Image 1: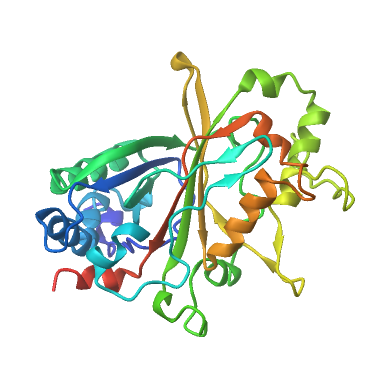
Image 2 (image 1 turned 120 degrees about the horizontal axis):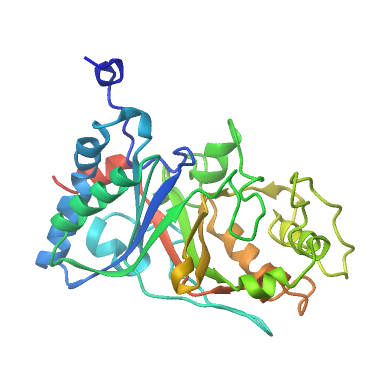
Length: 325
């Protein structure tokens, strides 16, 4: 027997800290009937309760492929799907309107984040989940992501450099039991997703030095550039660095995935942000789209358009498993 098949299956379907992989599927789903006690709600509850077993059934085919599945639940269906107390910060995505660019809020009740180092495993898990959910949900959006070269986005820059590591990772992504302000969210994570498409023509009209000034890092070797002054145009790196009123910096986990189709002229980045504090990402988006100071928006948006925006809460695996009781 192959040695990998003798190991225990390392499946934790609600692991927001699953490793970066070469392939991913992002599914935004809407329930067909959100009435309490409806067949749609019952079906969704049953699938969520069985998520660990469904994932394990596919993951067992290749334990080294790091298959993981994370499901977030939206504000509009949290009560009817879970019956659990609401996380304090869970609410619909708040549209951010700047002078030039807008971060839109778009529909979605469930967000399914499947990732693995094999595209076929992502495909198979998606197929099995949608077979089980047939008739209970409609697919609002399906995006197939891939890892591009050495963790770069389609604009050519390394993505996710500032992600927390080690002990800082759970602290940044999971609501801790010591957080008295959010007692109903312990062990879970807030999830914000946005689908961006890029104008490579507009981006490539900029020189490498201009692109580096927009991002805040060098393109070749990913070295961080100095921050701009308080009243000057800030880089994407600076605008997406969030500190609270006490000067404490708050990290988030980005699991962004490039996607696209050269044949259709589509080039994009799917932003995936996990956080223990939703306000951190909301402040990040305000700084990007409105600017800091206001009027000096993130110049990355001049070549990148946000098509979607959704907020979800990723509950602990034990809550999902209990939905079948």
